[in-house]
Amino acid sequence: MAIIGVGVILPTVAVQHAEGLDLPGAARHAEDLGFDSVWHGDHLAIGRPTLDCAVALAAAAAATRRIRIGASVFVPAMRPLAWAAKQIASLQHVSGGRLILGIGSGGGPTQWAAAGVTYAARGRRTDTALELLPRLLAGEPVQLPDEPDQPVVQLAPAVSRPPFWVGNASPVAIRRAARYGDGWFPSLVPAGELADAASRLRERASARLRPTPSIAIGAAGAIGSGSGTPTREEIAAQVSRAYGMPYERAATIPITGTPQEAAERLAAYQRAGARHLVMGFSGGAWRQQCELLAHARSLLDDAP
Image (cartoon, rainbow, N blue to C red):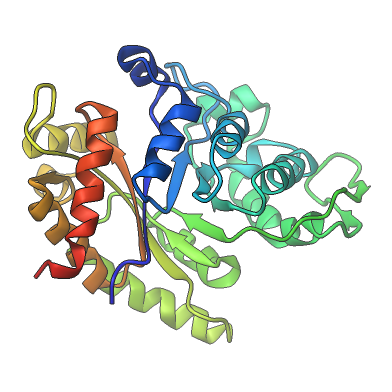
């Protein structure tokens, strides 16, 4: 059984400037190559240039017709919940129902402080969002318990609920995915560890009499060996530093090498239970990386 879909992270502001790209053009390129989805992160104040997630995805949606647009991942708890719901509903409306909503509670304390939200409240506010967003998106009157004065809010227009993919690989995230999610969306998880986590997800969903959420993997890498393309060792060192991960574990994560070798890595995630993979490029020319990944995807069914 093949992975249902492969998506790509849209280029950062720095990559756009360096390579003469814009988001509409990048999204069209991904759609023309046959990818299933394009994705953008949700960051506020992280010390480098970033675009607002909803604005970036709206630009991608307006430039395309088929490809899904995804938030990787949207952080509703940093916003008043009614405002988060309005952004989600607007994206679902302007994209013609093509949104996939990755949901998380990540980001460091500085980002939460910039949003004016207590860092310690992020877990409770995320659970509230997962519970109430479906009703808000459906246009129902909803009381917002985590907001001042607990207002009752009813939003319009109502939209169909996009799939909720709960981000992160933590036990808390698995619990949330089993309870609320249509998908579980961990990033930078070695394929060898995925099967055990998938089993825990299945057990938790079964205990709640819910279908097992599908599994999507957030991956990192760079395919080929052209100028400016980092090696597996270089990417692993970056992952190890950024996430405090032992280098030995980080070295199992990057998707690198030839398209055939990349296809073999995709197949390993497929065998472990993944049904979608979202690739963030760690270097190399963004358009060319997309083309090499599309080639790898075409080889997937023949990979061992």
